[in-house]
Length: 285
Image 1 (cartoon, rainbow, N blue to C red):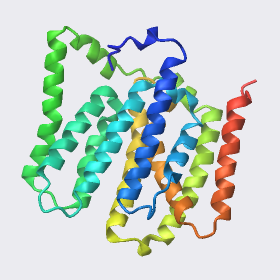
Image 2 (tube, one colour):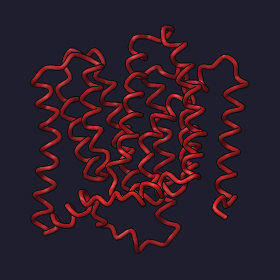
Image 3 (tube, rainbow, N blue to C red):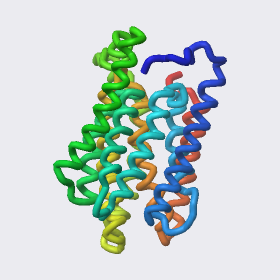
């Protein structure tokens, strides 16, 4: 993304503080998304707290503004997709979803892969016609056309191309991303996620059909989020941001619906403890 605001000139504390506010806002929106679509049956901030907790494992995310800004659009896209469930007419939803995906991918190129996810998720929510597919693509390409035209007028097109498509994924960058610390963090989160997915599979038949479709689409969202990591110019932990959204949803689903409160509480305090441990102990020393 082109740095039109010249954020590199901000005071060191300003950018992470702004991004932290954005992250907390998105956490609350995730809670609203789950409550509004009957995944959580009463008002709760468990999804918000889980998302913030998981993001705390990767504090350098607060320095990647495009990935965090993109989070707003991804959550908005989820609201749009779920609103299409069993609707007899959803023309504007398809157009809006395509438009939001285009804006998201311009802000943060790896999110481009969620355009495929969005189309598949919409098909999951309801049957799709060729006309609706064209509307989705129209919404997507109209934003790119207008954006590229504006960039051409202001002679920013080469800079935009360089910032979006100049990949530098060397073996060194990949190995640096998958360092021992990152692998340990991912294993800890992955362990809790596996328990949550087992709980979800055991409880699958008790959910409403509507909720099953929503949760099924979240699995796809998580997998697409993992794929987005490899679309970055340089592999960074901020690439996990979208995957952590999907991950937090299943973990919070487990924490919210589990009748035995002891295992979720132990996992929560364990994750919280490891967060402080990773923050204040230098493992590379």
